[in-house]
Length: 116
Image (cartoon, rainbow, N blue to C red; front, side, top):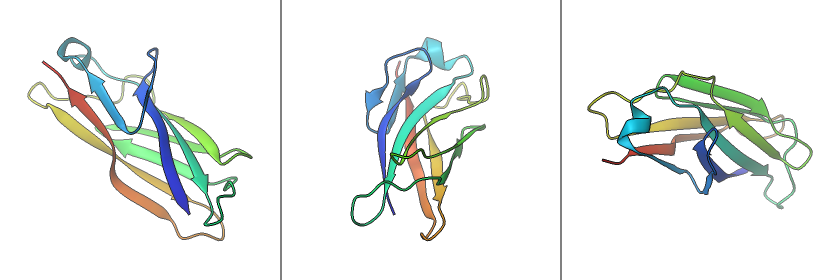
């Protein structure tokens, strides 16, 4: 199974392409709600339906199931994700499981970077 992180961002903002979320120091002082859109496909490029996706890290977790197009949006529970006062970056791990496929596991799949 191939997995692509299409977009990532904070809830209420326009997400950017890829797996990196940049937040300013003021925003990072408060809990964050992370939004990540992914697509899962088989080796022939066909969508993987009903795959269970879990994103976790920085104290937060999000889970959802892929739709008929192999897509899903993961949104962390409000006010779970936090960056420490002296923490300039953090990562979240992604796991996807679907019947008939090996589990997909990617450590540090999403990176959150705090700017000054």
